[in-house]
Amino acid sequence: MQLQTLSKLLIAIIVAAQLSACGVIAVTGVAATATIMADRRSPGVQVIDKGIELQASGAFDQKFGDNAHINVTSFNQKVLLTGEAKTAAIKKDAESYAKGMKNVRSVFNELIIGPNSSYTTRANDAYLESKIKTQMIFTQQLPSNSMVITAEGSSIYLIGILTQSEADLAKKIASNTNGVKDVYAYFDIISDGEKTRLEKAGKADESQPVSPPKFQ
Image: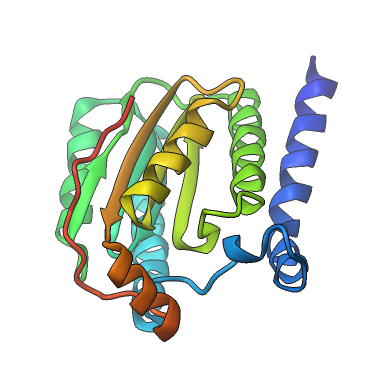
């Protein structure tokens, strides 16, 4: 059992490490050319998102220690919190901190109250996340660089800047992946016209509307 877990984790790491390389292959190929596009966020927003993730993750580690296992995902300044908090107070405190951060537009708190997940569970999540990422990269109609996929406890969380048809396809792929329990989507939905503009400009509008959060 332990060997299987380590194997899954190794596969997940290898696949994740190769995702950027897949982008290079796809650019020169035919079948997956349409899936590898510029990030629809502006370069400035990409930097802001990375800063939010680093600041919040560091603050949570320092503040909560082993009393919580919190993953921070920021995309287009929308923040998703996943993982575990040992008390409701910690869950609320983490959300309050994220909401108070500069440049954060909205916070989706999906923390589960309970003990920290095991390494076996995390390895399975990493493997599941990598499987879905790989499927989406090689799906022609999806701009895989304009969304983030997070797996936690076999649930999948999707954040990105997509058209409605792209969002529906992304949710379908995630839902149909073996081992997925639930799918939650936090997309900024754009029009086909805006999609065309972004593809020409190579960047996303920094002020997208907040869409309804959940899909099951």
